[in-house]
Image (tube, rainbow, N blue to C red; front, side, top):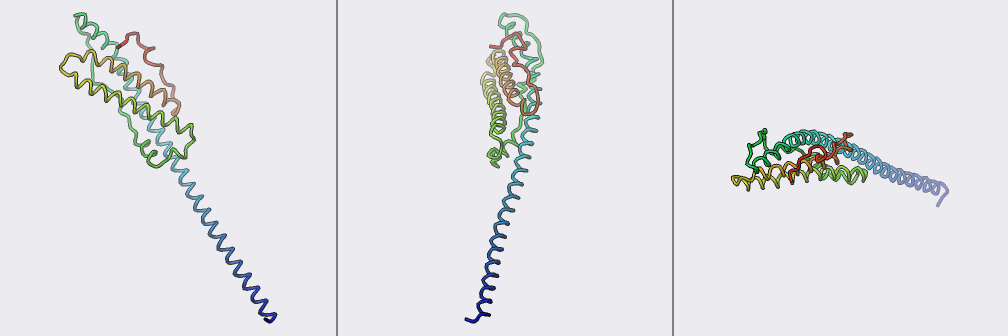
Length: 202
């Protein structure tokens, strides 16, 4: 092989090696940029999902406040009415508007669960949010249980026994949910209802 051929081969190998390195670098860079962009998009989605859940919890908290006020205002009157009727005295009047439980929503939470958002949240933050929604779920379970009990007791005269107990249990569930939600939305939850009224429904 002549000297010029040797130089040509060396140059060709150099060009090929440079192209291979350039291609590998381009692929690695492309993958890195793609991953970075995906991480950024995921981070934005996770942050937006967290904001949506906290907004939803804030709205749920406001509903809990309204329901709690209704239950707290009516419960002493219901207890007085129950006790009066059992003693054969005149009924105590009060404005009963149904169970009046909080109308809560979980759409943002359900979306976050389905999108595996909690895998990317801080564990302590994730736990606090999940516990808040579990407290709401527990409150809704109490509501469903008493609606069934009330329906079964219809026409039996047991309304005056069931509803005060139901209201007491609603208040326990509402207070528990509010205590759990409050730190997440920078609110100060009220004391437990048992400290606010003297009469007991139990």
